Length: 399
Image (cartoon, rainbow, N blue to C red; front, side, top):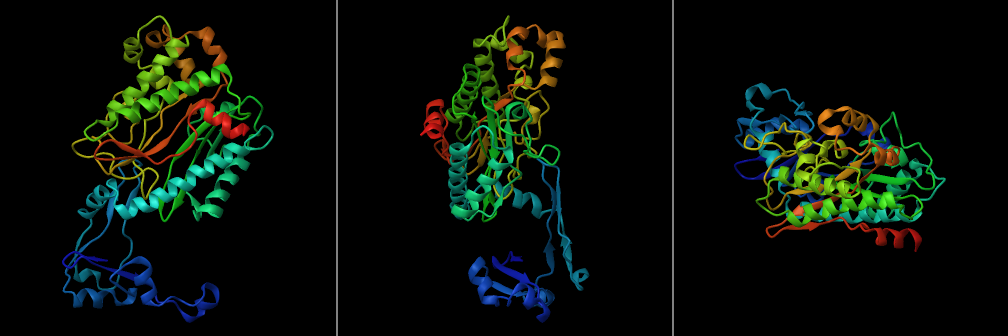
């Protein structure tokens, strides 16, 4: 409970039956909770009505609303016998708390920095130990073990995406139907999207590199296209910048590289953009807010609602960047057979696709690079400290 008139916080805990002690251990006293969580007062849930009466509270605001990104709803289900004696408002508080979560506090950033450091180190550990013959699942196990053993991060923020070879063209690989169960082969590209969670705060980091540590010409070409796109966005990010403009910038840089590689031909960059070819190779949004959820709340507002243009429609926020926002920056370039086949058959797009060169990239997979970035008054602070150049990756994997 937060008493809005006094700004005091009250933590309610259940009174544990004596029988529970042998299963769960002796319960902590109220002073332990007050010290541990920094609340004004701790009390038993059975005393809620009495506490509200003593504080002369007659209006209760309960949490109910929908995450505009995921569509998932949150609703307070807790109740107590005398709740009908109070005036209830279940609509006002959710948008207020969502907006609060968009802007990170100094204390929150302390935990986020820790989570980012541990997750980055875990990615480097996996990079050092990736090799042909082991399974994607072993990479997942390495990551989780490092985060917990060395960083105290007991849980992952989401299911690890450990995609090798052609699996790297599946954006959210690793789910129950495709559970990181392929064995790595020499020459594969790896795309590892993994993040630890610390004190409730999520991270979301993606690295991409060859299983054997040696980039082929084609792997280097696509990797550097994505890296160039990410660097362009990071250089342009600052307060006042519209996030959809950053998505367009990433698309443009990737298309320029694909044109240079002759994967695209017979047109200008502007014509490729007009034909929506960016959505063929990067069929997802540039990034999303991060915080207490890996895809955090607050991405869309009345002023900046979800947009419908091709490519932009994939974005999880359409807002203007402001200091205190924490967002992922995750451009990618993928060779997804279904999307390529549809584009080749499309009169508007097919004339710009070089089918003979594209054949080389069938089964390639894809590359995504994802950093977690705080918007500051002067620009950004990047919390991800993973190797990001071909030379740095080679040094880690062959050192």
